[in-house]
Image (cartoon, rainbow, N blue to C red; front, top):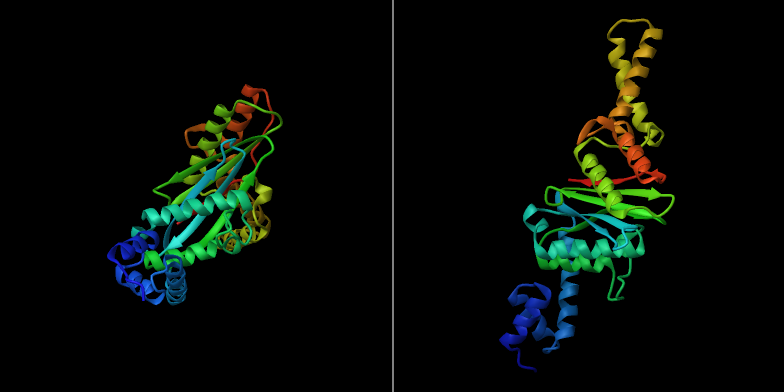
Length: 284
């Protein structure tokens, strides 16, 4: 049987983040083979992950990745149990790794994606992190954007509790510094407002139906005739849409203009067509 040295235990601890006693046991079980010991701990981590998977994950963090050419970006939300772990360097590194992966591989079936380096899947990373950090860690959601021309701006607020991506598409190449500033300003605006969509026609009908039901009930309490109630409800729906649609909201840094007017003014200034019709916003 190979001698298990303190140096080997320390090395395995540094590689995996697993407690020293568990590292020593893994090395004993694998006769001192470092790679086999890592696999042994990973398998133990899977067992721990199963036990922890029922715990509530009400905390976590959000991160964004934007490519150097500003035309590809991803936003990822990762959940855990406590703010302490959410701020942990290992958790943050995991979050950034998944962001880069999503930017490259897409935002579909993220946990099952094979890592770019072929070393495993994102779920494997999550499982290993559960063992290392001692909390239930779950992939929550992700969004990826890619543009032919234009820029994608990002904004992360409150140490990762709110994250926004804003793609601004252009008809031709334009001043990237000004476009980036515009996209970031709009992303900051969205982080601070109850934004649900860019345009009224993008609002889900079920959301409108729910609001209309509430407005009708409120209007009927007034005792007014049905034709008046219908007009009251229609007016409230229009007001509701203006409140939740970014294009019609007063821009937070310049309330005299709507966000759409801000975009139109910048398009005129740059002499190009600008299209802002989508965004991604995650929050805790």
